[in-house]
Image (cartoon, rainbow, N blue to C red; front, side):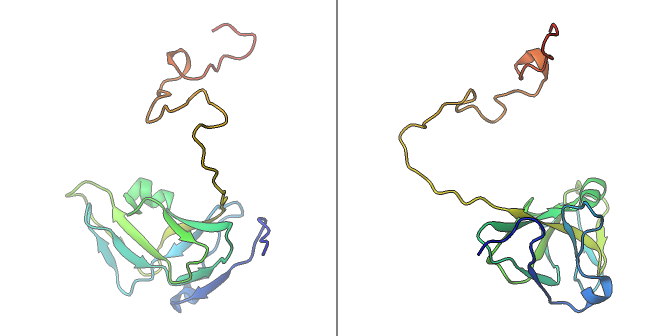
Length: 177
């Protein structure tokens, strides 16, 4: 089964009827990467800073059913940056064969003693981004067939400063450094 990566069509199951009142999850602008998901809670939900993550139902399930597709559940940037509300696991991965309700693991990262945040029924609290997935096969080797300049360096091995302090040379061709 081949899914075109330009405007594929997936099935959505509405599990909470209030979504029809709030509007189906949708892209908020023509160039939005993700659809916003609603908090399908029955009453206002107060989340305390640094408390355990809380699973919040989204009221939907999706059917992708393709080995080269997945969806990532991400925090909404405004809530994460301005209010401190992020996902409990950082990024949620929705596999193509997962067809149950999508839950949002919400966590308030603010310092203990900070103000709690209240999630109201129908608040848009996360976004779902659909992405193509590569599924490579693996060849077991004793040595890699090519070497890289980086090799085994990691965890900051390329530094954080720009220019002459060890990062890549970004001097325009013909200019003096």
